[in-house]
Amino acid sequence: MRRNRFVLAGVVVVSLFAAVSLRAADEADHAAVGRATEIFKWINFAIVAGVIVWVFGKLLPPVFRKKADAISSAIKNATNAKAAADAQLREAEAKLLNLEKEVERLRAATDADAQKIATAAKAEIEAAERAARLELKALAANLAVDGAETLLATKLTPQTQESLISNFVKSLEGRLN
Image 1: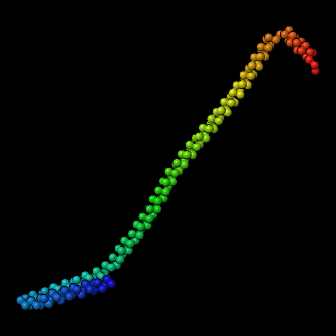
Image 2: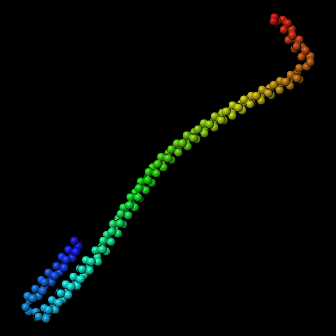
Image 3: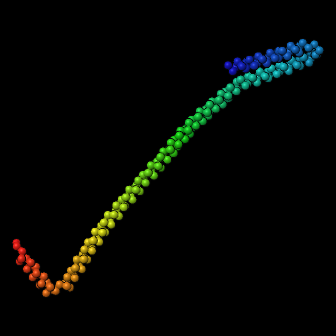
């Protein structure tokens, strides 16, 4: 098809040359030498134009084909690269969206854990307080018993002991078993 274009261009050039040659021939006032020179110029032009068309017809189509293939390949590579970049962008946006959700989830979990820790610490403090109170009561009881013992030891003389025992025995005698 391209070759047909070049042939057509050659035919157009030859036709143009023929038209100009006929016109030159029609002009009667020109000298025969001037006409011959003009005809040789046009023949020379037609030969040079034909050679140029033939050279470009032979050499340029493969060059254009290579460049078209290279451009097509570059377009395919660019399309693939754009698709990969779009996929990465979508993935990054999804991760960012999930990251925000994950941050909210971690905040909620942290708040829940902090509340659990506070509740556990409060319960532990209350248990320690109860244990300290019980220990304090036991200590107070021991001190009271020791104080009472000391008081009794100083106040309870052998005569007082004998009087207490005899009163106790008398109270038992008056009772019926």
